[in-house]
Length: 292
Image (cartoon, rainbow, N blue to C red; front, side, top):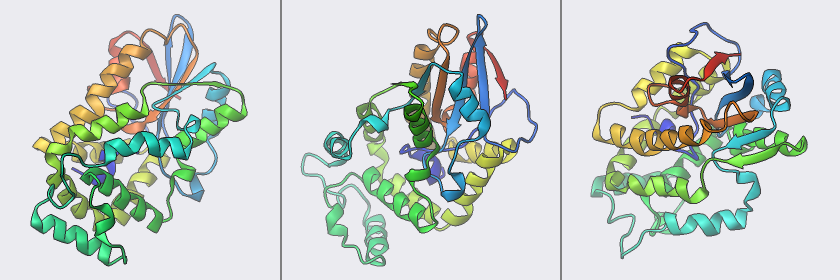
């Protein structure tokens, strides 16, 4: 399973199965309707580069037509200090465990060399959970190829909402997002192992993913998704914890509001596709969905 698609400071792709397969020049945006009331569903990516600065016109128009923006977590309302205070308890290992004790000797040695090559002492990560170390590695690689959360699409949506006095709501808490990583702890060693496999191809894979997302290339994005959540134990567990369980909860929340409120729903784009994705689940509940 591919590294880039497992993390939720998790960003990903926009896919749709069972809808139009035409090639679009922009990221996917969907209108979700019931009772003559329209809401919008937009898949976001959580990091970007300078070329991704500024939301497409169709997205800002949809925002202007909405009464409320709904995101996974409203990070704009959390200060950096509070973010650290609330996240740290989940990131730190407990009960005498250390990063080294959670990994095989081979994978720990690889990790040690990875940081040493960057003049970083692995000792500073001694008490961090492997998933927290993995996110650190991802952030370093994103920065190396010119990407940061500064140009993340979800952050731009929140900024637009604030600038235009559009109310913001959230689907879950920061703590809920942290908890999902704890559920993956039983596969800590596999997580790091696959991280190294992906790092070797981060330029091609990550840049290719972003390119496909920008253009709405459904065929390419579908292949990324299918490679991500395979039938391995790790693939199935990750899909269940990071996507299926959360999607089911979000659909339950949203299905009572769409058709009554004009919402702009912006979530990590990996939450949209396949049989457990928001697009299919909302369709199955009787909502009319159209790509715009």
